Amino acid sequence: MPILYISLGLLLIAFIIYIILTIHHKKVSDHIKNTTQDLLKTYGELTHKHHHQYLNINNQSYQILYFYVPVNAELTINSKIIWEIRDSSKSRLINQTSFLASSDPKIIIVYPTTLSIKRFINENEMEFVNYHTMFNQMYVIRHFELEKLLQELKDA
Image (tube, rainbow, N blue to C red):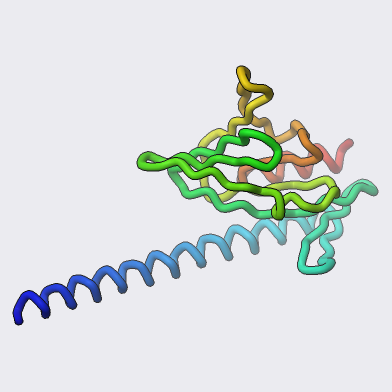
């Protein structure tokens, strides 16, 4: 009988830790998205159409997308639709077909990771993604690089 109580106690503790981590993740995501939206509004007109955000800056419209990559994980863009998130214990391939469905130019804000983003140019070559380089009709940037990109787009 004591083993049952110990097992239930450990299960309850694990559940509480899971809830706390989920709430923390939600707060971090909401904070980054709110500060990002405030920043976007200072550089252009931010609009919402069909549950999507668009930024109009210098007569150009960009769809704004957010992509979560854990803090100590690395993002590698294998192709336009296959992205890989690699952390210390595992690697996950993600099919981005529905995420990147529209043909509009995009600004994809990767958060909260601070590690460099890499992409394959072809089967043999890889490069680091720069915030000011557009490829496949999209800018892929880390959340703290957004202001630099917006300043360059406004000055262009």
